[in-house]
Amino acid sequence: MGSRRQVIIDQDPLGPATTNLQSVALLLNAPDVDVRAIGVVTGDHWRDQQVRHALRLLEIMGRTDVPVFPGAEMPLVSTPATTAAWEKQHGQLIYNGAWDLARPGKWADPRHTPDLPEGNPTTRPASEAAASAYVRLARAHPGEISLWCAGPLTNLALACRLDPEFPTLVRELHFMGGAFAPAGGDREFAHTPRREFNLRFDPEAARIVFHAAWPRVTCSPIDVSNHTRATPERFAAIARAGTPLARYLDQFGHRHRPMWDEVAAATWIDESLVTRCEELYLDIDLDRGATLGDTLSWKPGSEPGAGERRARVQCALDDARFYELFVQLCSR
Image (tube, rainbow, N blue to C red):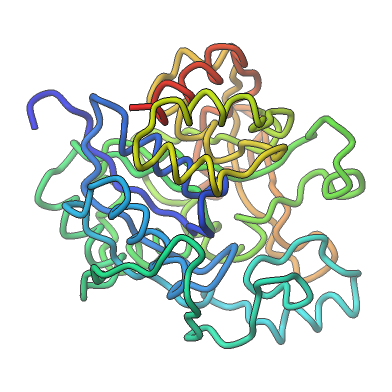
């Protein structure tokens, strides 16, 4: 392994491609990165179908050496029924991931796994649960493995409960999630600027994670990435590489969409892509009212002091260098 940086990917890999799997591809193709595991959590879609998308991407990229660990099928507390009851009282959520049954390609049965557009995987996931694998790897390599997370934080919360020392054994936590004041007039954030899907889907898990003793925390919120776009021109440049990944992205890559998870991956690979950041204490609103799941933040010195973690929150991005790195790594 040499000096390669070790990382565990925790993701809700809706596929094919999408911001979720395109970010995974960046991490897999980064030359100085050693991906030790991919854990899958229900979020944008149900866990079992997302496991299959992840396995298929690894087959396409020739990276079946990376194990895929199924994680949580449901959040710690929330269910489709409790969320529907909340919506009746407080208004409909703009986006609700696996539970958005009105959207094409969504269904109510978490174990339903129809054929994949990119082809079904022939490899199988690991039998060990994601939270258990995270603890095992962290204990075997204390202080060496980073956690990169871009889905709901359920798997991390379960790992913290499984082994209270787990957060102290990893190198750092770098996660995509949270919202403060996203620009761009996006209807999802126009009236609820602190509501972000990854944290809102399992707020109880976010509370556990935000109160854990991580050595270092980096937050890549919606604010730093909502303006970015995966354009047809960028995918055309990648397609010229002619690799299996390039062909996959040429066919399935999401155009005209924000690159939320890709920014989180790229800024873990190269922190210098972030041109401005802020130190804040973070927590999550667990009030059962209209603000459930909202991102809470305080400047140092004004936090409640109830165990909140201090985080490096990304505020601004070198867009040109980010796009260059995205095309470069996807073309490898």
